Amino acid sequence: MRRTLILVLLCAWSLVGTAAADQNATSTGPESAAEKAFVTAIQADLMQRFPNAADAERAGYVRYTGVDDTGAISYANLQWDSVDAKHPSQLWYDKNGKLLGADFSVPTTATSPRPRLWGIDPGRWVEFDGHEHWVAKDASGTITYDLWMPDSDFAKAGGNVEHPSAQTLVAAHKVASADQVVTLFHFPTIWDLIVWVKPNPNGAFADKNPDVTP
Image 1 (tube, one colour):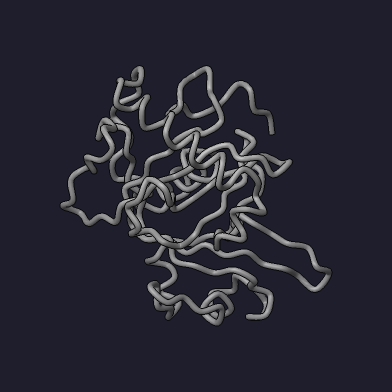
Image 2 (cartoon, one colour):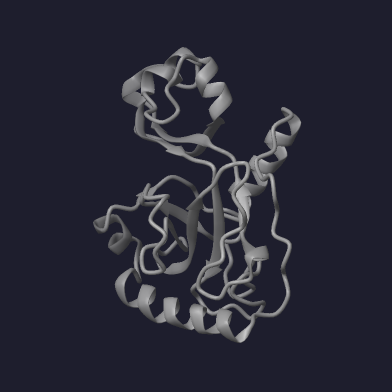
């Protein structure tokens, strides 16, 4: 999630005095041979199994964002602790439902080192603090994505961050009624790796892909 949503989270949390990313990526150089092999492998695998957004939804991934400024729409499977190169915690698609990339996650604590997995430079992983995400639908049927709040705020409103309830969003005046919430989940503190599955002239770990437009 190095795309617009995460950039928004970074800015917003810094304003309230809580870091959304305690450690940013420290490696942005060319891909190593091992990294290229990893990218090639997941491109072949994920493009075959999840080429379209509908494939992700059938596999249990849930959409929670709109189209960001890189052209990506994010879907999460809520399996943040499944450290498996074949099952990324997130997949992202373009506005036509074609696969663009994936996020891989590893749960972390304040003392956990950067992951050493799959031959990836540990410096490519970024850390994100826990927060809640939800999707809302109003009485007219309009759906709103990209809604979130930090764990600390959710807890202050009386919520259980591990098992969030729509009633807490009502108490926090985020929605008018619980039935407006169509998706709600906890995004825990994780190490996150962002990889473009669609070939990217700027590299698989780049922020944007010049071949993708919003």
